[in-house]
Image (tube, rainbow, N blue to C red; front, top):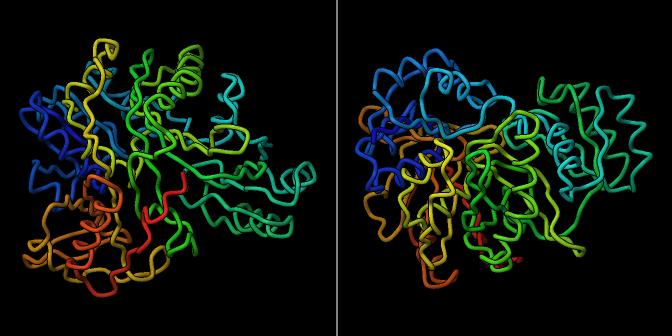
Length: 420
């Protein structure tokens, strides 16, 4: 089949690599891609949140399947437009994508589905939010309701910190329209894990678990980022637990969305917290996570194209057990110095042709005068497989040390002490 992939980050590079090695896939196109994706797929340039442009390109390349990577096109309704035109699409429509596009919506769905999550209050103005603080202990979490590139969640260890957070989000508009509404919730404690669920709107199938590392510095210090690394699998979330969580968390949410007339066809990402009282949901996303995808998909031996097409066509129940490489995977992100704050771009990248036994996924790269250069905050993600976490770490950090660009920053403790 011919597949059109939408997106340009490290997640999409990992998806492209998995699709290219799928026996069912004849050709992969990618809009807009990056230099790394361009080495294995045919790049096309469009506005990926413009449904009309995406539809035109889908027709132009005669795509049998469209895979939408980022959340923005999903929330914008690109999948709806393609489905209305008769195309097979992996990715939820705009209504179901609210599971990520609105934290208040996600909380309401969880409540209706009976899924355990933090106690919360959704607030449309700062006065209501300030009053809501009195309903919680000193430690609370303040979340911008909309999409804020993974940075709209503020952990507050006192009500004073929470007031500052509310002012930052709702008065200073630090996250733009995403912060017009906020969710104030209790702070849960425990290690976190990510679990991805494939869905065709009816059936649910889990992928291997992963844990990502959000803080910019070692020891989980510093500002939140889009993710500085990940490993898979998480020892505490084995196959038996993943299947149990598919039954107790993912299936009720998928069923609730279907009941509301919002069938979820795509990848439901569950951010989980393993609390002392059991597994609770931190958040849902409506697409593959980044950088967890870069740790999970290299372990997938099944034909990804076949699996995603089955989801798009409503026949995931026909797909048997997924074939997963039993080895551990560790992914380390190479970021620009200063990220997630200000950083320089256009810096030459060297050493890629000297690394071995790893997969290098491009995220924020470009070419200038024939030279690969930095373009974004997160530049590359390097993944290694090993017979143990320790073996994978040794291989991946050898590669991390070989790849160079001015100001390169990488955490040195990814998967060093798996917390679960």
